Length: 279
Image (cartoon, rainbow, N blue to C red; front, side, top):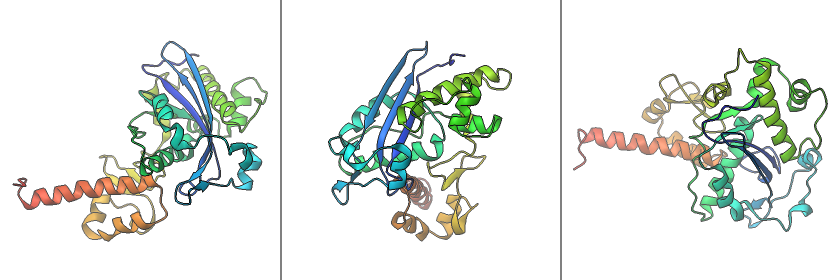
C-alpha cells in the first residue's frame, strides 16, 4: 500500500561510533524522502566523526565496527557533520520523520550532532521537535514484537534483505516494512502520519526521554530523585537541579530543554513579581 501523505515523510537511519549519544558521533546517515504522490529521493552521507573539544577524528568503538562494517580509516577523507549540516537540514525541511527505533536513538543522535554544529559556530534553522515521528519499530512491536530483520522477513516475503546494518539498506527496508504493515493491517492501521505517529508511545519532551509530557502537556522528570514530578514543581523546590543538569553527562538536547523551561519559569516569576507588568 502506498503512503497517504499530506507532506513529505523522511525515512532515516544512522550508523555511529557507539551507542552513548553524548560521547559518540554519526559515521553514516541515510535519507529516503517520500513525497505526496510517491516520488522517492535517496541520499546517503559517509561522515567523519568529529570530536569538537579535542579537535580530532573520534574513533569508532570496535564493537560498533563489527556491526556496521565501518572502520576509522574509511572515514579519514569524508566531510564532518559540520561540513554537511546545511545540506542535511535542507533535506529535513517541511518533512515528517520515520525510522526503525529512531525515536530512541537515531533522532536523539541527529539532534546531538546539530547542537554540536551550532556550538561550533554553524547557524542552523532546524527544529526536530516539531515534525511528526512514525517509528516503524513501535508499530511492529505492537503488532508482532521482533527486530528489523525479522520484520522484513515477516512482512516482505520471507527473505533477508541485502546489506543489513548499512544505513541505506536499513532505511529502505524500514520504508518497505511500513508499506507492508499498512497492507497487512488495513482495519487497524490508518494510512495517515498523525495516526501512525501515535505509536511512538510516551510523549518525550527531550529526545533521550529524561522529560516526558503529562496529559496537560506539562514537562515531567522521568529519571532520578525527582522522577514523576513536574519540572515546574522542581523549579519551585529545587532550583539548583537545573544547574546540576547543565553540568551533568546529558545530551545537549536534554540540557537545552531544561534551560528553555527554566527561562520560561524565570520570566513567569518576574512577571508575577510586577503583577504582569515589567515596566
